[in-house]
Length: 86
Image 1: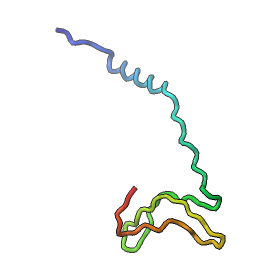
Image 2 (image 1 turned 90 degrees about the vertical axis):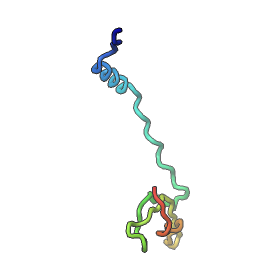
Image 3 (image 1 turned 60 degrees about the vertical axis):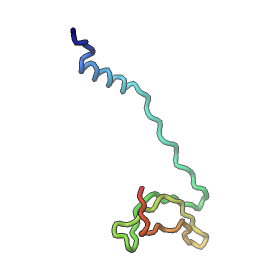
Image 4 (image 1 turned 180 degrees about the horizontal axis):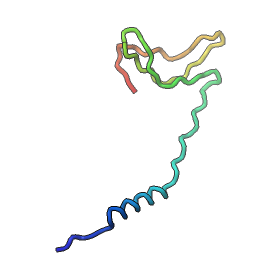
C-alpha cells in the first residue's frame, strides 16, 4: 500500500501566502462617535489613584460636561473597595 502524496510543504506555503496576499484590505473602524452635546468631552478608560488602592482603580471611559461656571459634571468616581477591571 502506497502513501498518498500531496503538494509539497513548500508549495503549500506558497499557496497560502498567495491566498493571503489576495484577500481584501480590512476596512477601518467607523469614525469616533460625535459628542452627545457640544460641551461634552470624552475621557477614555484609565487607571486613577485612589485612597486605599495602591495600584489605583479602573475608571471606564465616559463623557464629561462642564457647566457655564466651569464645574465638571461626570459619573461618580470608582470605589477602591469594589474590584473592577477592563
